[in-house]
Length: 198
Image (cartoon, rainbow, N blue to C red; front, side, top):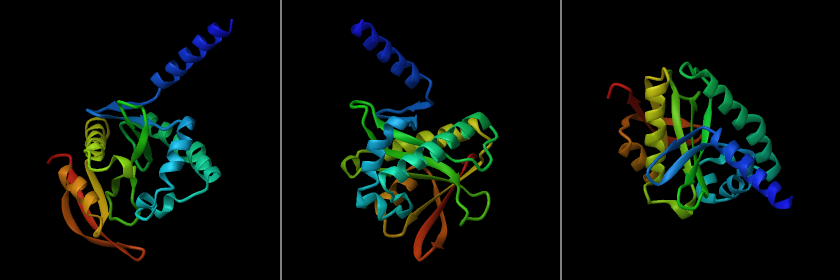
């Protein structure tokens, strides 16, 4: 009886995972957020290497759970139901390492109010333990491909602090072209644009 319940639980977990949006890459998978990601997501947001760049991601574990369940997950459902006409909806997916199934970062897309329209941007963050391995570039390239092939999006923006050389390298490797510097708050960013037709 207990063995049967375990098998059923395993089957349900696999079924639930198979119903989630994913994009496969060489070493990673982009996967729709789920509540079970909370601990790993929260641990990432404790890394100063991430929150010094993305201070809006600082939160308590309870706040992070609230954001996950009441913002990110519902927004993802709205985005996916809206395809191809995604408008101003946000979409945030986890970066999952294939060989370990570890949640190592996230990649997102949505409007950046500080930029002129069309202002849909791509953003990302990755664990300090998984940098300089090409995973972020794979994630961003996969998100670009998905957006240009499946939605009405024709232009994408990316910004990176002028002092954040690794992030600027990722953006440039993904084909974005530098356009200008922008100041958001008291911080200076390089601003890049990528056109679907490039």
